[in-house]
Length: 242
Image (cartoon, rainbow, N blue to C red):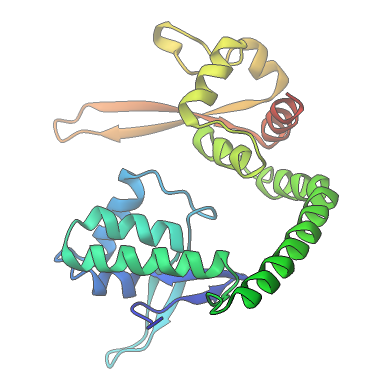
């Protein structure tokens, strides 16, 4: 398969440089504006869908620092589809082929029946060994995820993704609903989706307030509910046990 857009290894995972993708898609928007808008509008999560990092760029008038973004293949595919042009269609098909290649371990399609039988037997053995390893490592993986995320508070949407990665079929809206139904979040009034007194006493949530000054001078204060490190471990353990 020809390399339409470069894919590199970043922290042991396949990643796409956002600038390369932006260039290929022929977007007319400034790169920084384009990538920030896409992340905010479509709720992409750092360290889950992408990783940002500073890079020093040498110029004639001196060095400067700019922010680069390493995208997962899944995010790159979604950004290509959102672009809604011919280049986006080409990129989307390319990333689908890349995903299939990764999932199939780079195997070629067998040309004979005997090759197909041999491939099937090898894959069956590999799948069996992988399944054994997954079952054996499951507690370790769960503990590692919980520890790595519990160093900071996270949004409910991010917690939902962590749960999905550990086998719990739940999205952001369903998780919010479950938390309200089980008395962790308020279900009505001006405190809708904010922690109940019980949750705050347990240390499961914290509230982050942000002030926004409008052009007319009016100051708006928004409140965001975030799950604490203790809360992440609490909810992961509780929902997995179900």
